[in-house]
Length: 305
Image (cartoon, rainbow, N blue to C red; front, side, top):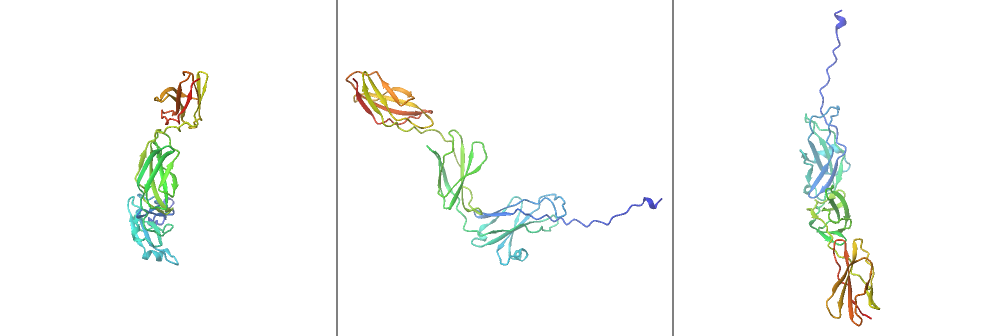
Protein backbone atom coordinates (compact mmCIF):
# COMPACT_ATOMS: atom_id res chain seq x y z
CA UNK A 1 0.00 0.00 0.00
CA UNK A 2 2.85 2.37 0.78
CA UNK A 3 4.51 1.59 -2.54
CA UNK A 4 1.29 2.11 -4.46
CA UNK A 5 1.11 5.73 -3.24
CA UNK A 6 4.62 6.67 -4.36
CA UNK A 7 4.92 9.05 -7.35
CA UNK A 8 7.74 9.34 -9.90
CA UNK A 9 9.97 12.38 -9.56
CA UNK A 10 10.98 13.71 -13.03
CA UNK A 11 14.49 14.78 -13.96
CA UNK A 12 15.12 18.48 -13.31
CA UNK A 13 14.68 20.81 -16.32
CA UNK A 14 17.77 22.61 -17.61
CA UNK A 15 17.81 26.35 -16.88
CA UNK A 16 16.32 28.58 -19.57
CA UNK A 17 18.93 30.26 -21.78
CA UNK A 18 16.82 33.42 -22.19
CA UNK A 19 18.19 34.07 -25.68
CA UNK A 20 15.88 36.29 -27.74
CA UNK A 21 14.78 35.05 -31.13
CA UNK A 22 16.55 36.68 -34.05
CA UNK A 23 15.25 39.88 -35.66
CA UNK A 24 14.17 39.16 -39.23
CA UNK A 25 12.76 42.47 -40.51
CA UNK A 26 15.84 44.68 -40.13
CA UNK A 27 15.95 47.74 -42.45
CA UNK A 28 18.49 50.56 -42.80
CA UNK A 29 18.61 53.82 -44.77
CA UNK A 30 20.83 56.89 -44.94
CA UNK A 31 18.77 59.65 -43.35
CA UNK A 32 20.37 63.07 -43.16
CA UNK A 33 23.72 62.66 -41.44
CA UNK A 34 22.69 59.42 -39.75
CA UNK A 35 22.07 55.81 -40.67
CA UNK A 36 18.51 55.17 -39.54
CA UNK A 37 17.50 51.58 -38.75
CA UNK A 38 14.16 49.96 -38.05
CA UNK A 39 13.06 46.53 -36.88
CA UNK A 40 10.57 44.71 -34.68
CA UNK A 41 11.82 43.86 -31.20
CA UNK A 42 11.55 40.19 -30.24
CA UNK A 43 9.07 39.35 -27.50
CA UNK A 44 9.98 35.69 -26.89
CA UNK A 45 13.11 33.58 -26.42
CA UNK A 46 14.36 30.66 -28.43
CA UNK A 47 12.65 28.50 -25.76
CA UNK A 48 9.37 30.27 -26.61
CA UNK A 49 9.29 31.98 -23.23
CA UNK A 50 7.93 35.49 -22.97
CA UNK A 51 10.54 38.20 -22.45
CA UNK A 52 9.62 40.29 -19.42
CA UNK A 53 10.84 43.54 -20.97
CA UNK A 54 12.07 44.72 -24.39
CA UNK A 55 15.68 43.60 -24.87
CA UNK A 56 18.50 46.02 -25.70
CA UNK A 57 19.80 45.79 -29.26
CA UNK A 58 23.26 46.07 -30.76
CA UNK A 59 23.76 47.54 -34.23
CA UNK A 60 26.94 46.33 -35.92
CA UNK A 61 28.35 48.16 -38.94
CA UNK A 62 31.43 47.16 -40.88
CA UNK A 63 33.03 47.14 -44.34
CA UNK A 64 31.65 44.66 -46.84
CA UNK A 65 34.11 41.81 -47.31
CA UNK A 66 34.36 39.14 -49.97
CA UNK A 67 33.71 36.35 -49.32
CA UNK A 68 31.21 37.46 -46.70
CA UNK A 69 30.92 35.56 -43.42
CA UNK A 70 28.99 37.31 -40.69
CA UNK A 71 30.92 35.68 -37.85
CA UNK A 72 34.35 36.71 -39.16
CA UNK A 73 33.00 40.04 -40.45
CA UNK A 74 31.74 41.07 -37.03
CA UNK A 75 35.24 40.94 -35.52
CA UNK A 76 36.14 44.01 -37.61
CA UNK A 77 32.78 45.78 -37.35
CA UNK A 78 31.84 48.68 -35.10
CA UNK A 79 29.15 48.25 -32.47
CA UNK A 80 26.47 50.83 -31.65
CA UNK A 81 24.19 50.20 -28.68
CA UNK A 82 20.57 51.07 -29.47
CA UNK A 83 19.09 51.94 -26.11
CA UNK A 84 15.50 53.02 -25.50
CA UNK A 85 14.17 54.42 -28.81
CA UNK A 86 17.54 55.36 -30.34
CA UNK A 87 17.86 53.65 -33.71
CA UNK A 88 20.61 55.46 -35.56
CA UNK A 89 24.36 55.64 -36.11
CA UNK A 90 26.40 58.52 -37.59
CA UNK A 91 26.96 58.50 -41.36
CA UNK A 92 30.31 60.34 -41.06
CA UNK A 93 32.04 57.14 -39.94
CA UNK A 94 31.23 55.40 -43.25
CA UNK A 95 30.93 57.98 -46.06
CA UNK A 96 32.01 56.50 -49.39
CA UNK A 97 32.33 52.94 -48.09
CA UNK A 98 30.20 49.93 -48.92
CA UNK A 99 29.09 48.64 -45.55
CA UNK A 100 27.13 45.75 -44.10
CA UNK A 101 24.74 46.29 -41.21
CA UNK A 102 23.10 43.77 -38.88
CA UNK A 103 21.50 43.81 -35.43
CA UNK A 104 21.07 41.36 -32.61
CA UNK A 105 19.08 41.48 -29.37
CA UNK A 106 20.67 40.85 -25.99
CA UNK A 107 18.87 38.60 -23.50
CA UNK A 108 18.48 39.26 -19.76
CA UNK A 109 21.48 37.04 -19.03
CA UNK A 110 23.66 38.90 -21.54
CA UNK A 111 23.46 36.29 -24.29
CA UNK A 112 22.93 37.66 -27.80
CA UNK A 113 20.41 36.40 -30.29
CA UNK A 114 21.41 35.11 -33.69
CA UNK A 115 22.16 37.82 -36.27
CA UNK A 116 19.32 39.51 -38.08
CA UNK A 117 19.03 39.68 -41.83
CA UNK A 118 21.78 41.93 -43.20
CA UNK A 119 21.56 45.25 -45.08
CA UNK A 120 24.16 46.69 -47.48
CA UNK A 121 24.60 50.47 -47.91
CA UNK A 122 27.11 52.85 -49.46
CA UNK A 123 26.56 56.14 -47.58
CA UNK A 124 27.46 59.33 -49.44
CA UNK A 125 27.76 62.94 -48.40
CA UNK A 126 24.50 63.63 -46.50
CA UNK A 127 21.77 65.14 -48.66
CA UNK A 128 20.98 68.75 -47.83
CA UNK A 129 17.71 69.31 -45.99
CA UNK A 130 15.38 71.43 -48.17
CA UNK A 131 15.21 74.98 -46.79
CA UNK A 132 13.05 78.08 -47.14
CA UNK A 133 9.83 76.26 -47.99
CA UNK A 134 7.08 78.71 -49.03
CA UNK A 135 3.44 78.01 -49.83
CA UNK A 136 1.71 80.67 -51.95
CA UNK A 137 -1.93 81.07 -52.91
CA UNK A 138 -2.10 81.02 -56.74
CA UNK A 139 -4.97 80.71 -59.19
CA UNK A 140 -4.18 77.06 -59.99
CA UNK A 141 -3.92 76.00 -56.31
CA UNK A 142 -0.96 76.22 -53.91
CA UNK A 143 2.53 76.88 -55.29
CA UNK A 144 5.42 75.45 -53.24
CA UNK A 145 8.99 76.71 -53.63
CA UNK A 146 12.15 75.86 -51.69
CA UNK A 147 15.95 75.69 -51.90
CA UNK A 148 17.84 72.42 -52.13
CA UNK A 149 20.38 70.38 -54.03
CA UNK A 150 18.63 67.00 -53.98
CA UNK A 151 18.23 65.14 -57.26
CA UNK A 152 14.61 64.30 -56.35
CA UNK A 153 12.06 65.55 -53.84
CA UNK A 154 9.09 64.06 -52.03
CA UNK A 155 6.20 66.28 -50.99
CA UNK A 156 4.23 65.42 -47.87
CA UNK A 157 0.84 67.04 -47.22
CA UNK A 158 -1.66 67.23 -44.39
CA UNK A 159 -5.16 68.41 -45.35
CA UNK A 160 -7.34 69.79 -42.58
CA UNK A 161 -7.38 67.43 -39.60
CA UNK A 162 -6.26 64.46 -41.69
CA UNK A 163 -3.10 62.41 -41.48
CA UNK A 164 0.12 63.39 -43.19
CA UNK A 165 0.56 61.57 -46.50
CA UNK A 166 3.25 61.27 -49.12
CA UNK A 167 1.54 63.35 -51.73
CA UNK A 168 3.76 63.91 -54.78
CA UNK A 169 7.30 63.80 -56.18
CA UNK A 170 9.27 66.21 -58.35
CA UNK A 171 12.80 66.76 -59.64
CA UNK A 172 12.57 70.57 -59.35
CA UNK A 173 12.54 72.75 -56.21
CA UNK A 174 8.97 73.83 -56.92
CA UNK A 175 5.53 72.28 -57.26
CA UNK A 176 1.93 73.42 -57.78
CA UNK A 177 -0.73 71.48 -55.87
CA UNK A 178 -3.79 71.77 -58.10
CA UNK A 179 -6.01 69.58 -55.87
CA UNK A 180 -6.56 72.07 -53.03
CA UNK A 181 -9.91 73.47 -51.90
CA UNK A 182 -10.57 77.01 -50.72
CA UNK A 183 -10.98 77.34 -46.96
CA UNK A 184 -9.11 74.12 -46.09
CA UNK A 185 -5.84 74.41 -44.16
CA UNK A 186 -2.90 72.55 -45.71
CA UNK A 187 0.52 71.79 -44.26
CA UNK A 188 3.47 70.77 -46.44
CA UNK A 189 7.01 69.54 -45.93
CA UNK A 190 9.67 68.49 -48.43
CA UNK A 191 12.28 65.72 -48.32
CA UNK A 192 15.18 65.29 -50.75
CA UNK A 193 16.15 61.77 -51.83
CA UNK A 194 18.44 60.04 -54.25
CA UNK A 195 17.06 56.55 -53.84
CA UNK A 196 14.91 54.74 -51.31
CA UNK A 197 17.86 54.13 -48.98
CA UNK A 198 19.30 57.67 -49.21
CA UNK A 199 17.13 60.48 -47.89
CA UNK A 200 17.52 63.93 -46.35
CA UNK A 201 15.92 65.20 -43.20
CA UNK A 202 12.50 66.74 -43.91
CA UNK A 203 12.16 70.50 -44.26
CA UNK A 204 10.32 72.75 -41.87
CA UNK A 205 6.56 72.83 -42.34
CA UNK A 206 4.76 75.47 -44.42
CA UNK A 207 1.05 76.08 -43.80
CA UNK A 208 -1.57 77.83 -45.89
CA UNK A 209 -5.36 78.13 -46.15
CA UNK A 210 -6.09 78.94 -49.81
CA UNK A 211 -8.72 81.58 -50.54
CA UNK A 212 -10.39 82.71 -53.74
CA UNK A 213 -8.93 86.12 -54.53
CA UNK A 214 -8.77 85.57 -58.28
CA UNK A 215 -11.08 87.31 -60.69
CA UNK A 216 -12.52 85.65 -63.80
CA UNK A 217 -11.03 86.34 -67.21
CA UNK A 218 -11.84 89.66 -68.88
CA UNK A 219 -14.78 89.21 -71.27
CA UNK A 220 -13.69 89.41 -74.90
CA UNK A 221 -15.00 90.27 -78.36
CA UNK A 222 -17.48 92.92 -77.17
CA UNK A 223 -19.66 94.37 -79.97
CA UNK A 224 -22.15 97.24 -79.77
CA UNK A 225 -24.77 97.54 -82.55
CA UNK A 226 -27.27 100.39 -82.64
CA UNK A 227 -30.92 99.65 -83.33
CA UNK A 228 -34.07 101.75 -83.09
CA UNK A 229 -33.92 103.30 -79.61
CA UNK A 230 -31.66 100.46 -78.43
CA UNK A 231 -28.03 99.38 -78.51
CA UNK A 232 -27.42 95.62 -78.53
CA UNK A 233 -24.30 94.27 -76.80
CA UNK A 234 -22.77 90.81 -77.21
CA UNK A 235 -19.47 89.27 -76.04
CA UNK A 236 -17.83 85.89 -75.52
CA UNK A 237 -18.99 83.69 -72.65
CA UNK A 238 -16.73 83.01 -69.61
CA UNK A 239 -16.00 79.36 -68.78
CA UNK A 240 -14.77 79.53 -65.16
CA UNK A 241 -16.53 76.99 -62.89
CA UNK A 242 -17.14 79.68 -60.23
CA UNK A 243 -18.45 82.29 -62.68
CA UNK A 244 -21.60 84.12 -61.52
CA UNK A 245 -22.44 86.97 -63.93
CA UNK A 246 -21.47 90.10 -65.86
CA UNK A 247 -21.53 93.77 -64.95
CA UNK A 248 -22.33 96.22 -67.75
CA UNK A 249 -20.79 99.71 -67.74
CA UNK A 250 -21.76 102.67 -69.94
CA UNK A 251 -20.33 106.13 -70.55
CA UNK A 252 -21.90 108.99 -72.47
CA UNK A 253 -19.45 110.52 -74.92
CA UNK A 254 -16.10 111.06 -73.17
CA UNK A 255 -17.65 110.79 -69.70
CA UNK A 256 -16.84 108.31 -66.95
CA UNK A 257 -18.18 104.76 -66.98
CA UNK A 258 -21.21 104.03 -64.79
CA UNK A 259 -22.59 100.57 -63.97
CA UNK A 260 -25.98 100.10 -65.60
CA UNK A 261 -26.52 96.35 -64.98
CA UNK A 262 -25.25 93.83 -62.44
CA UNK A 263 -24.71 90.07 -62.63
CA UNK A 264 -26.19 89.56 -66.06
CA UNK A 265 -26.11 85.80 -66.69
CA UNK A 266 -26.03 85.66 -70.50
CA UNK A 267 -23.30 87.30 -72.65
CA UNK A 268 -25.81 89.73 -74.17
CA UNK A 269 -27.48 92.96 -73.09
CA UNK A 270 -29.99 95.39 -74.62
CA UNK A 271 -29.59 99.02 -73.58
CA UNK A 272 -32.93 100.64 -74.39
CA UNK A 273 -32.40 103.74 -72.26
CA UNK A 274 -30.60 105.68 -74.94
CA UNK A 275 -31.29 108.97 -76.70
CA UNK A 276 -31.07 109.24 -80.49
CA UNK A 277 -27.94 110.95 -81.77
CA UNK A 278 -25.91 110.43 -78.62
CA UNK A 279 -22.66 108.45 -78.56
CA UNK A 280 -22.34 105.76 -75.91
CA UNK A 281 -19.33 103.67 -74.86
CA UNK A 282 -19.66 100.26 -73.18
CA UNK A 283 -17.43 97.89 -71.21
CA UNK A 284 -18.13 94.51 -69.56
CA UNK A 285 -16.64 92.83 -66.46
CA UNK A 286 -17.02 89.24 -65.20
CA UNK A 287 -17.79 88.42 -61.55
CA UNK A 288 -17.36 85.11 -59.67
CA UNK A 289 -19.37 83.64 -56.79
CA UNK A 290 -17.14 85.25 -54.15
CA UNK A 291 -17.45 88.72 -55.69
CA UNK A 292 -14.08 88.92 -57.46
CA UNK A 293 -14.51 91.19 -60.50
CA UNK A 294 -12.37 91.18 -63.61
CA UNK A 295 -10.91 94.23 -65.31
CA UNK A 296 -13.12 95.90 -67.90
CA UNK A 297 -13.22 94.64 -71.45
CA UNK A 298 -11.99 96.74 -74.34
CA UNK A 299 -14.64 99.47 -74.74
CA UNK A 300 -16.92 99.65 -77.73
CA UNK A 301 -19.04 102.64 -78.79
CA UNK A 302 -22.21 103.17 -80.81
CA UNK A 303 -24.42 106.11 -81.80
CA UNK A 304 -28.03 105.67 -80.81
CA UNK A 305 -30.61 105.97 -83.62
